[in-house]
Amino acid sequence: MASDHPFQTLFETFGKLPSAHAEPVNRRAFVALGEALSVPVESTGRCILLRAPRAGHGKTHLLSRLQHQLAATHEFIPLYAVSGSRIDAASVTDDALRRLLRQLPASAGLSVLDLMVRRLFASALQPLVKSGEVPCQDREGALTALRNRPIETFDFHHPNAVTAHWARENFEVLGPRLSLELSQRAGLPIREVSFWVEALFRFAATPADQPERVRALGEAVLSGPEGGAAMERLAALLGLVALLVRVVLVADELEGFSAEESAALKFAAFLGSLRQSVDPLDVIISLNQDIWQSAFVPRLSGGLTDRLSEVVVDLEPLTEAEMVRLLESRVPGLGAEVLDHVDLHKAGNHPRGLLRAAAAAWIEAVERRGSQGKAAATPPPLAPDPMATAATPSEPAVADVPSLPPSPFSSGSEPDSVRSSGDEPKGEPSEDAANSDYQIDWSAKNEEPPPRESDGVPPEMADLPEPGVSSRSEASQDDEFAMPHFGEAVESHPQPGGAQPPPLRDPTPEEADRVDDLLRQFRERYGRGSL
Image (cartoon, helix red, strand yellow):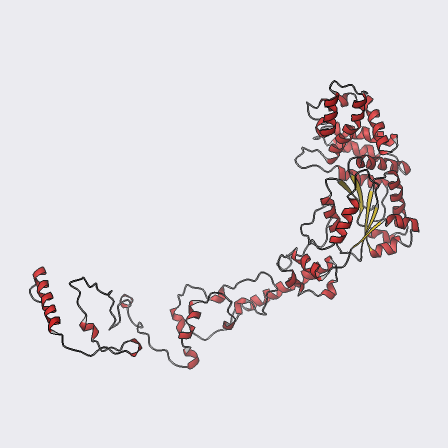
């Protein structure tokens, strides 16, 4: 179908690795973002402004690739604007938990949050074991297990994880000590850290096959405070995660900010307060140039504008080479051919416009080729070829098996099925084409073809030799019964090519004696009397 084409995907979702990618497109921006985020986990975070001249330049595609590359050391949390224009502490807390609760493959229901809780508790328990507050018979062995195998050591669901079971039984005493250690390490209020330590401990200790553990966590979070207290709770969650990995907040779809005058100002103030509470927090604001100029710049002070644009990465228009590579990511090997049929004035110089124009050109070429194929289905009648009687009736004509091109943009205005005889495809010539120099076009000369000597001959006689032509193989010189065929050699039929047979002559005496001797031997051997 014409609607099925390789350029259908025009929009992508952040977090899903793109199926098609052209390496040169936005490569400079990809490298700049990677360098800005590739820092130690304890480094101070920055706010990165990713701008595009207009929609469709590949911002979401770029961020999804960046997330996939840094997945081992970074946790990317997408921010979704409520009602299109509001991002606050409650919505970001919900976004963060949704992201952290994603299940791990082949883990029997465990999530990313399960592993993070185990690592947090193992790191907070180490100083308590080392100082002796937590009694332990093999202190060095316990410290080694907490450092090197934190996930196995705090596996609450394994019967042999004695440390996890001990922590569960003594959590009322151990919990406050873990909360104090983590709050001091992250520089966060003890009250909000204690809330998360208790909530996350109950979540991780509940068997993974019980769905109520997620509901209990959600109810505990949603029943929390509002306003400034909600901001402190969100900061505590992000600060605890930031002890393990780099946390990157990504605000990608902010087009709705242009509909509300105060949306950009509230968002900038929210990010500023959050970054002051969580020092190693990174933020990426991804938007188009028109949204930045209309919704942010007129409503923000110089200081807020500078904070949001601490690092600026601008996307650039596509070059011709990048256009070819982008098209080849969808149709390998056909990028330049497709680009020749694209109206670049309408497509523009951004990926989405180019792909949309390529899709229109592809569909138009497919429909045009299909209409030509229908017209070629009933070819005009041709003059009968008298020489065609030699062809086998079961063999299909060449025009019945057209060779399909790799794309609808193949050269030539007519399909292969109606190509004239002068446009034969290159390759090995057919047998008829190889013998064309030795054939006569009788229909062109308006002459009757010569009668074929096999016309009117029964099939059983068709293999008999013509007069004057021997069907036997040449006799061996040692065969004593081999006789020269004088009678056949003197027939008066004209020979091919105009050659005439030799004149008749009398046999020599030696030949006559030889014949008599052969006849005598024949009569002696077979007793037939005379011939």
